Length: 294
Length: 135
Image (cartoon, rainbow over all chains, first blue to last red; front, side, top):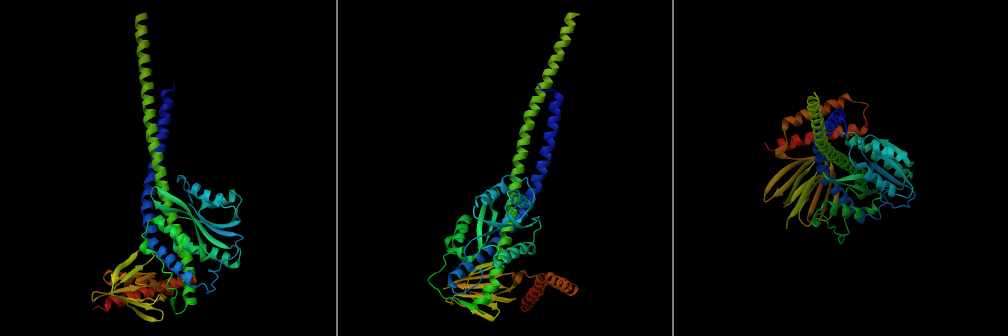
């Protein structure tokens, strides 16, 4: 049996661990609330914009905007959104599984240190990496999106896709891949996202019958303004989403760690008391034996 | 027959209701929308948006963005939007001063940032105009 001193030492270390994980849980919980609110507030805007474009993509086939042209896919361009810090459970690992599934040639732009490390470690083609701190602003993300769009326009990549841990609720984050450019494949993705979010069908129902649509001032101008904004906004929304996912996952992971520590502490305390009691009994026996002998 | 109007900004869903008619400030001038409008996608300007429901007109200040009219549904995607009663005149004035100050101070800033500040100034101006016209 371990000596009482050893057990005491372990109890102390487990207590420390519990304190740290508890503090991290609280921090993550407060950050999570903010991040979740931000992600949820931005969703209607992003979804409505995607919906608008989906309707648009159907109607303006004759318009040759580079974002709408489907080309032969040689290299996929992927924006991978991860966290800067670890200790958030299986969040990043789950996202990486999606990346591992990609067998065709692809180039990556990564938000978050964890993702950059993964891409570098697995010898994939890393174009650029960007930090993912807690105060990521629209301007920060715009840089990422515009970088990727530039690659797309220059022909270095033939698609722009985003992989990020989609935030469903505090306990559930789903790694998701969404193609952004070219816009032709938008319709399917939209349907998927919508059923995922459990939105009603009435909000959707694109009216394919009425094929004429008026653009003011003209279609080219509207597209020119709407498309880049769409890409930037969409990437930004996913970054917010990933933030909400990260803090949620971290909170849950830390809560589990804290609970485990508490349980372990109970077991150790029991063992310690037993050892202590055994020691006392032993001493009494020795004293009694000594008295008899005298 | 009535219309459904939805105004969404990156921060929130500002307005969502069934209405009778709405006047939207587009880049080509104001456009009034009645039921049965042709499908339309247009860019909107900083300006005032008037919503009429049961004879009552409500004013909103909107920042630039897009409006889509399809069937009896109107979607407005705006950078900013606020209903008239929520405009805090004092707060807007301070925000306006701050943005103008930043604009005059900064000469060599990122053009995107410059544009953003300018849009803030214009939006503030629109908010004040909407608020003051009611008096």
